[in-house]
Image (tube, rainbow, N blue to C red):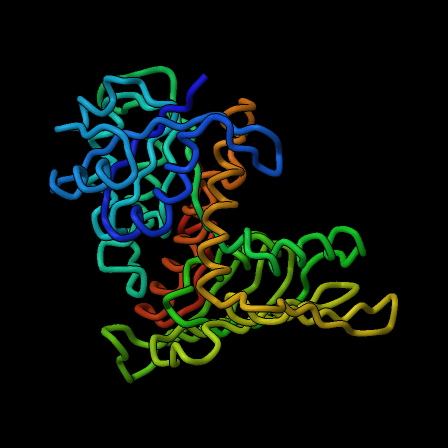
Length: 349
């Protein structure tokens, strides 16, 4: 058996973060931590055919001249890896061919870029997922697509360790959180807040006066549906030479502090009455950790296809992330707290 993986969008993200691992799966003899992996056969479609042809030359696979041609091979999954500013336009025609599975780069959709998500992004993303899950809205297809997100930060070593600690030591529910985030990591860190605490109930936010790299600072406060409260600051003004994010999560029976892509994980364990620090050692730089997280994310996703299991990160996680951002933006515009679930429902009905 061979997994047929179709790629829409063959730019920098696809070449650097996805295709090195996917192309390595062409060898059916490769053994992964979970056992022998099924081989992968790649196909590509890009608005710029030359880019797709370059990927085929460097990583193997076939080039399609249209979405229709790409889908004629009935791929097991379609990875939509376009820039977030083009993702709506790239995905809408794809739905007419009834894909079985769609995997999205993050953020799910952002017409003005990830640092400038607007309310319309949320509603268009919800429209896409609703159409995908129901089949093609225009064609009336009965069988819908299974959708998935990358959110590879969940596969960082320190985040995986944090999840184990929360579970194994009975840290309980999240009660407070504080997030400082460079916009380069913005959607990922909001996803981690959703992962550890669940969806937001209320959001109130203000925008700063200064603009860095085309985006203003956003400072928000929130209350989650589970009752947890907290604050979040998003900016493009922090230096890439410094930590790109500082995340503090306080649970009923302990707390965690996550710092940067490869920074230390600080754990305070209330029951054991001590703190500990877990740090990566050796020449394991920030971007090596970043690259490794894509391989782990893709391996987990392909394994879910092989086993006929749900994806490790469902598509609705991307919508929940945009829901939080859209609420921040409305609060800033209308100068009031926003009832998140009432004003930005994520229902797929």
